[in-house]
Length: 433
Image (cartoon, rainbow, N blue to C red; front, side, top):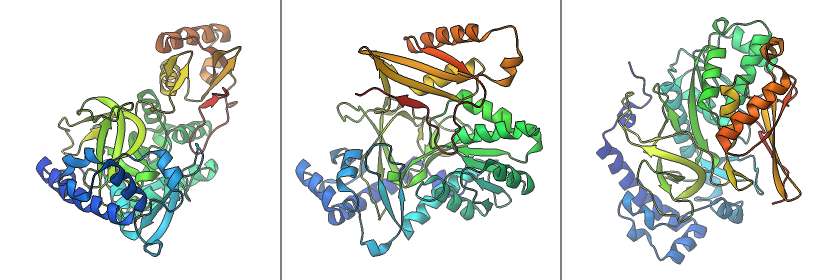
């Protein structure tokens, strides 16, 4: 039995989806051209007008938008409607310079919440569920998006926000929460905290988790599933396109269906901007097909991934994106080698460590240094067959096999790496690059 929130759209034949996209893109490009002077200027410069856009295939004629454009146009330069029509803003955490501020009309919020509702239903949610939302609320999109989606599905919603883990656990147990929504690192921390209080995975009522907002590996998924006794689903989104719910996993857990009636995805070569065929690895680009407040066309996400149209056993017909495989910008280049934090996490989890680690990159005498601090688990402490220095040597060798370069590994006591209740700070790059 498959669950859909809007079956007529989620399982629509491909021809129908393309028809929707063709109709929406023609309208949206004209709307943006007439209402967003910043983008009109980009189009004029590229010598393209709304009349040139007759179907979704013509999208490649349009100019890209980047994070730099967003910074330059801050705060109102990419606004698509009068401010009086906007009812809310959301904003990114602003890790690089100026924050991104996105504007929403009520129409935009309704569409966004519908997308999040699709994700909750895909994870098995119904109006009989108790949905605990432990993403941050406020400017961060995680809490508000899933909160709205949960309301639309009719779940009893626990708007917890992140942090205050004692209270999270009290409500989770007393109100019998069945779906947990938060970052994967916080889910792992909640699981750890439950175990410390003597709870076993079968003692909670959770059946599913919807985790996103930071990169996480299959190994981390398996560990969270085991420790909470749930199925863990991925969800993807970015403030620039609305927030979580741009795409989400179904029961197959093999990539995230993109809500193609609202968001059109392309994969490009990050160096040349050339559009690549489905199945190619490249940078993900999104176009919002019907947003009014902050209608971005061809926005470069910097996420590296692959799109696939293979038939999905869940019956959904929307294209799937794989988990982002790193970024075209936050990839670390260490001694000339491309290193993704997720590669390091994979090695640690495969070797039985928890996902509590920190990567410190520095430059000493013009040479990059790579240090990895890893927490030992209490079980490992009581296991006397292997000493700390042997464990460190083992990790050094396994990391070298994965990365091709040598890292210094420091095994530290349990609980000594600061826990995060939002996005985990995994990488500290001290190089002045």
